[in-house]
Length: 313
Image (cartoon, rainbow, N blue to C red):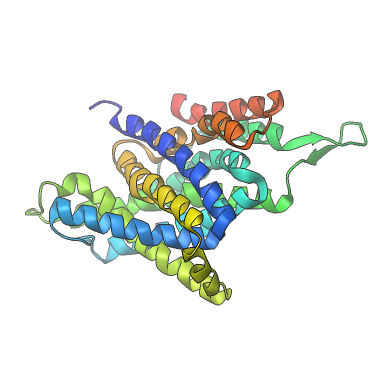
């Protein structure tokens, strides 16, 4: 089917909009680290059940060492680093601005795709990156209260750095996942079940979830945060939003994102999946009763124009 990868990428954007709203709620209730750990656990369980029903194996069958290596690296970069930054950015600057910084994922994916996969990175791609950065600047910069032409950040520096880290993790993690998927496809035996052709992205996501679960547990242990996990279990609202985050994020959204990069270039797939900042504006404003200024809308439009240039040029 023509444009199948692009269509799947748009569906992923909707899934990630819902994920961002649910994750924002969960992170404020039980903390970003606990939310990430438990969504990895829930994701692994859901994916094991799906694989068991679909192909008869509740684990990533046929995955070789190279597949585990690259998918594991994608999990460490995309989940442990990227989502650590993203979920903490929700706490500092909110999901609306946190998702705005995710428009940086396509530029980072394009650069990683050029470095690791030999994909084309022309001057037009650099133009698209510049437009994207301009849009983010319009949204997060404001005139100094003292007057004049001096610009100041209207967001905490910590939140901005977390947002940049989230975009970096998402973009690079996606390219690493594509490499892992290529190794997975090469490792499939000729007698592999026919259903595995569509189940492979879900098996790949399970590898990422298992790696992410271990990564977050180790990180929390090193930081002395394991008691937060026990407290989080007793927070019913927090766990409910974490479960919804898992359903729309690692289970459906991420699996479909891996499927998307099978049928579309990493930069194009990442571009369309980055529409979440546009889709989240109005539901976020309604839920939190926050005013969206014309300048912020302009910033998002300019930023998304830059994202679109990756696909149109």
